[in-house]
Length: 202
Image (tube, rainbow, N blue to C red; front, side, top):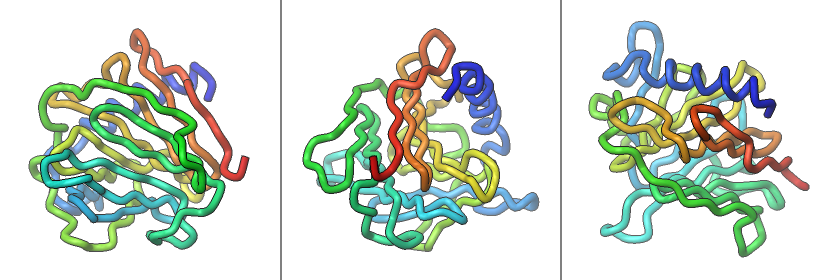
């Protein structure tokens, strides 16, 4: 991503995350908010990008694993594609079929729950597809917020850690995953900088 594009995007993300805070599952404008918990799954409409909430044990916090599935909302990731493992302590990018991550960075979670997460209803195992840029999925017990990015039919997933101040802090990673590939950008001195980028299958 070009730096100017990322800068404009960072401003748009902050605005989008604050819009409609506290709205219900689907409001009158069709905006969807959902709280996803352990074992819940959601995807980006019109794509095979799928995310699943996982945790190692009850005493551990939820994590979000996102990948390009063989079928929409499917369990299996495409071999040699890239998957993202996002937690409050950092982000990893893995090549499906390989043992070691190709990208692994730590980050510090912001204070407080994300704006809008308290009012978002639980998915309760429903098949969730986010379709509009104003739709959001909140990962329960964490600061992880995800939404679609781009314009249909070329939508991708965006995930980022957001706290109660609704700001993207320096050192925070912005993760994009699409049917084409993965991009990770880091907020530095108020500017997003691409730190990792790969195309599926390469």
